[in-house]
Length: 636
Image (cartoon, rainbow, N blue to C red; front, side, top):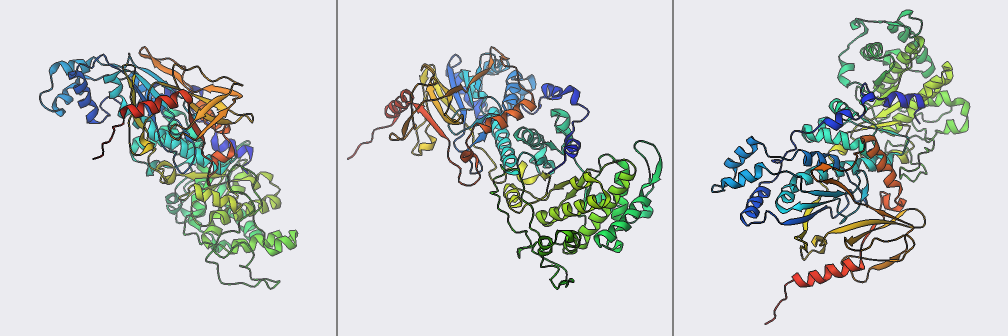
């Protein structure tokens, strides 16, 4: 695992830590405005206005029908952006002028005057706490107010909640499979769906449990720790040590200046003997690049060690016979497909203790021969990784001579489990040889198209990675690109409304409702219960009948040990009514909320569905209304 020092180095706050979240409080995306909507919202608004429905009062529920990623939970996110939108809801003069040209001809001038005066001051918004775990059919947001305005809010609220919740959920799943002590960095800006998608991905990945981002603007706006190393281009920009313009580095404490390149070359000669790697196998351009980067960042030196094509363990060099007659490549580290043999871990990401990687026959037979094993393992990988590792370790020792400690390496290709174990073995060998305990704990960062399944597989293989840099699969949510939130009218002028469908999943639950989370004797959340607003809330220790909303035979009594009302009023009388939490507080809430769920609800394979029920009163209300609205067929 990562040492505490390196963990701090990797995740330390930036220059804006003193004004934590101040940028986020005042930042508002200028794209989020009333015209960020579907045209039919405005044409409906005109039709409502034309029909004299200005004073009609409606209630809408914003909810989703299915949890994403084949899981059984969702993280609710995007609430703060919704409230900023409510605060700023107003059609500008240029908006009105545009609508006069965009809408069909014949719309009365008085309607545009009405729009120009429209705000969200008469709307009331109820919601779950941002960062809470949520489930299908439970409204994330409930909006009540004048029909026209609450209709106009629909598309924008959906776009603010859909991706935010999907992204936070995806990040939370990565956090669970990686474990609590592995650092996760979001590297997805270049693969995100445009600039707004990139910023949102960085923000909600952090909320979901990631530790930092490569996105500099997201770091400034949201005070997310910003991290990065360098690209392969930096290494390949040097062809030899003669290109180094600066070679001298002053000692961190004494100020004594020494030639860092000379120190690195001296250490490389020593290491080549210890690791049995010829200095001729190492790239001079790579060494020059690493020395250059180390001089620029002596306290934060982290380097790519696989700039050139890393040869997989599936393509071993020609067979070599060692002194005891064993095939040097048949050392037990490969299971025939280039991957290390799986360990006994359950791979669920919750157990943060890593079992040791498989040892070769010599390691098991004679621990004192560990040096020979490291050498054979190094020979089983491509020359470029040996070059990168040798040059990196030489530069790290040179920095140590000048009073600095490096951070670690990044591996961006190849067999990540095998190479991380090999790197850790090498660090441990050098740590022992040079009496530098911290060397064995240098950070190993892995990137390269990593997804949830990759991390689960690496867990099974006993990897030695301290940090994952994850981009494409995280920010694009490739396993499920949309959450599918919907916004449905459930009441108008105090009269319930229901949407019927032959597909029961699409039948809405009518009326103005409250929702409560009931907890069992073990302290875990047991069931979410929806009730009509005029019902008495469930009480601790009192038996409550919970029913499936559409299947009559599915019902159960619950005696809760704790009852949690899930709704708070966040917007009323034209203002935000709650003190909004910081990004850090929302981030903490995600993890705290997930801890209220049983492990079987959170597992990646065949998770147990969490139960969402309705009260007996609401059940009867739904089905009575269903019968009233369902047409009666006629046989002839």
